[in-house]
Image 1 (tube, rainbow, N blue to C red):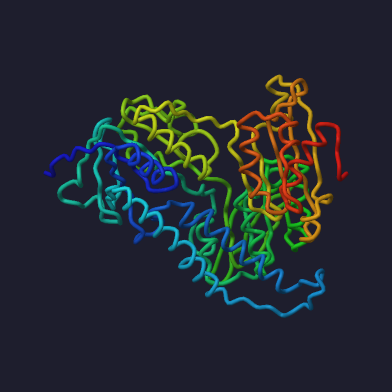
Image 2 (cartoon, one colour):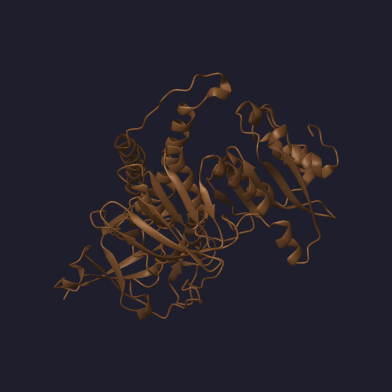
Length: 480
């Protein structure tokens, strides 16, 4: 029987939350051990987690490639003759994997080595509140004669992430794929069905439409991108339809049948069944926390009704010495949220007065155009009894957006009526993601609209509408 190894700070999961927690814990003087399953087996993401390997980073690479191809095919707006641009998708995928993903994962590994983090390759399985085992990755992991490496800890941070939700009659196999499969296609499909119009579905639908696919989105609710205000979504829908994307709402996906070359998706609208034949069907209806696949039920750690780990503001669970961060705890499943939670937990273990505060966590969707939402919407503020007003400035009044031929969208502030403190901000428009940091700072600090109005923004830039929206709130608009 294997001896029990005693460790200082142990982290299970090397994704955004886990590797950042490891680095911060090391910086704060802790001796850190990070457990992460390798990349040699199916669905194993390795260091960097889902986001870096098969999620937000490679998806942005495909989105960028799609934009380049679309612009190359038609730049007539700028007086540039239309050309018959083509794409070698094998080269695109090779660039995405080796020049983007692999480069970034090597960077994570280098940073962990720099901070002297011990990395154990394997699958962590909980034995009880005080001990876990590390088994070899792969189908024979439970056939290990010695029962795996046994580890105890002073502090344990759980950062096991999440995985795509699989719906009935759409098992992930063959031509029915999840978002990971959608990012790894070997060819650009002529016809692609996307089930689920959330941020993942909308992003990849737009990317493949730019790459040359005809895309159909099937969404169960009355609108795609349900987490954003309808006037923001309206701008995105207009552009998606301009790309030739069909959006079917209030539709229920019923079943799928496939052969070697196609998949047929049956869905129901208003009691009537319809079907679509496509090359692939990508299901992107959400993600579920990985709290059921490493024997967490062998511990006393408490979960909520959504199978998420219940934690306090520092990431502490109900079991002393066990912490949890990232997608397995309540809140949006966002990499930057996990980053912050990792730093908070590592700081709390070191005795720092850290805490998670999600007032200003930005939600970003890299649709076309991009969307950002920070803090409260007007409706959310009113539900909490806060009297607010809103001020909006359109990108149509911004010289930089017009010169980019991207005048659609706006920046909007939600602020208190009495003191005019900003409690929320929203953007839909060109490169909205680049504005998210400033807006998060404004909301986190509870800045007054006058503070924002008096902050000089360079001209001509896409961040000028932030100042202009504040001017609108002050009652002194300039460019509208």
